[in-house]
Image 1 (cartoon, rainbow, N blue to C red):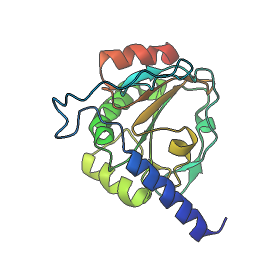
Image 2 (cartoon, rainbow, N blue to C red; image 1 turned 120 degrees about the horizontal axis):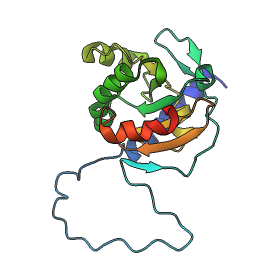
Image 3 (cartoon, rainbow, N blue to C red; image 1 turned 180 degrees about the horizontal axis):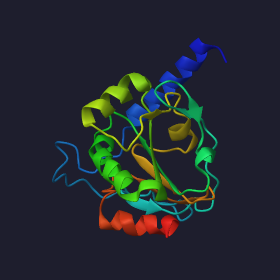
Length: 198
């Protein structure tokens, strides 16, 4: 695919994510106390969407995708490189407020778990390292690495709003995913991570 066409596709997909927005934990200004009528019930066959911060186990047992992601120098890898170790993959972006809010808790988790759990934060910023590396430098992260997926393979391929975090076991099979921010240094996260790290 020609670079110009690829860039245009990535831009359109990125705009779709931006318009869809990252999952918000709090109501937007002007929505508090809104007495709008409740939404009509979903049809019997439709599944209700997973609320932000809730665990979704509907993909349990699915193999990790083989999408490539890159370090700041452009060296690529895939999730398969981490086979043998449980992986917590977080999809985020510098423009997503809930993503930025949870990043320090992911840093604390990576420090606490050491080699027992690989914590991968994969940016979905279209500018890739140009946005991610300065953010990491300002934040002072030492345990997390500034991985990037500027072509949005993960968020589009998984149909994921940001932030989305997926736990894979040591064999590369999905255990669960969380849509929305979570305190990854807290007790609830430790209990959930125990499902793969035992």
